[in-house]
Image (tube, helix red, strand yellow):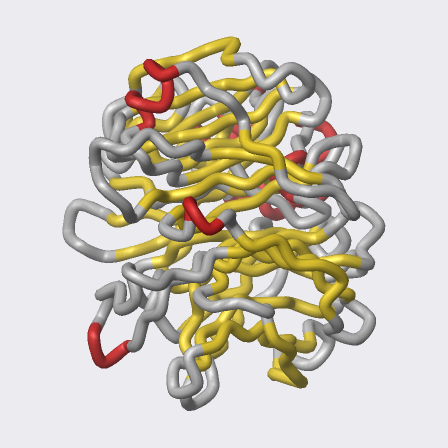
Length: 368
């Protein structure tokens, strides 16, 4: 289930469009079985993985989960993004990693590896500007305990050209509004420091929030903090539906027997509203939603929980659960031609079992 840029979680590709984008030379260079899989799929995705030997990479896949090609990575990645304008994809290091690799899925240009500046690390997510010229990345200014958005110039080998606040602590996922004028940032509210690895340092006084930020100047448009009684509900992942509504998914750091709401939505200028999931669904999600995706065409919201081994599909208009599936080690989710495609840490992607461990997220590449 998935990712995006404008947003990429909504971008699918038919075989003709993708082959045109990829170019005949790239398709011809593929192994015969990979070229055959590419020719008969309706959607193309990319996801990071760990191989059986412990090495890391990112793979291009069909909707059925057939691996088309692999690109090695220097270390474990987490989230990804893609620009349909420039055909560049990015794999971001898992927190507290310090690299991001930018590459072209069709191998048309050499990959570029960037490193976070001193005093920063990446949070595993980012997105491109609407024209693909800028790359935004969620970062941790750990000395000052504040979230930042790093800005990188795609026209100059992705040199870092600036930053602005995320207006919260622990920014994680981020996406771009359809008009390109606003970033949506999920500030998880959890303090971390690389000296302590992935340890969460402020679980007794978390500050989760969702921020809307002007891409023109980095100014705060509006900020939504979690209610006082849900301060341990970490806002982690976001997506945007066809009406411009922001959907968010959370991970709860409170008591294990609590049943807090785990997903919600809001439109600009409105208060957040939580989805009222059935108790059995909330229990199945185990207080942890690892990924969220929107299928705009069908008006559906997809959620996955690796802790609960569950994938859930929700009707965006009614908030009703329309499908709930068991998927051990459920990881990524992305929109497909019908509903969603999901992956797992144990190597399941759609219909295919591979000898890799898929990481938390999937990005759709190509365009209709």
